[in-house]
Length: 286
Image (cartoon, rainbow, N blue to C red; front, top):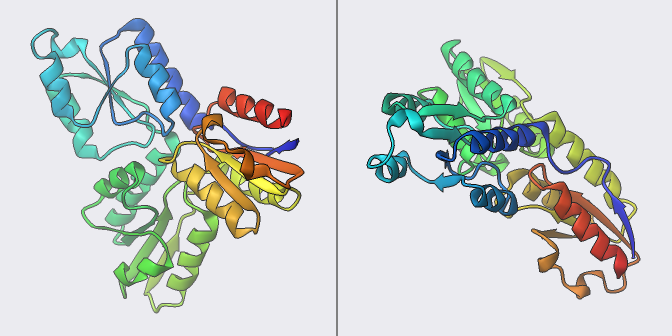
């Protein structure tokens, strides 16, 4: 089968930085706890866990595990690439643990912007998934932040005054534009828009759309929990090509390519290169 790869796909620099940070810590000290999954890819997280990374949901789990055996200074707490609320950072410091922040620099930019815009008197609107860890962390950087997932949520947005709109870094540019367009039709005193969508995310989306026009079927590789991978899959479907979001070759079924001559492959920013190569090689053998 003919397989065409997207020009831009796979690991972004934020994911690479987070993984390198974790690997360096594990080489030096195995007492490393990550608050949540470092990135949204199960295979990568499992590999790091095999090397000693301990994934926990709450800081209290670190206290319970280490209070009998180690001093706080011997414990490393790693902040995931998606970031977290500022109160959690302060809580880690107060516990005396060694805080290692692997937050993506672009996510940190959104955090800082939310704080600055609120201080400037804006009512801050974040366009994104309210349940995504990045967004849950970002809203902690101002006392009042409104999150809208799309135009269907605009009844939650302020009706008047000064507003500032930012986006989850991995959100669809198309959806962000639609929300901004609808908000612009309202009679706000002032409206400030800051495009905080990661350029790597935008490039991957544009590359996937370009591929949709020349293939019979699209495969989008990456974790079910990866927001940017899910956005890629949805974007491909909107452009009229049959699309499958798979976490790896083990989820592939032969009927996906029945009657198809050409397949396109792209992958989210948390998808490792080895997984893409394995999937592509097996697909080409068909």
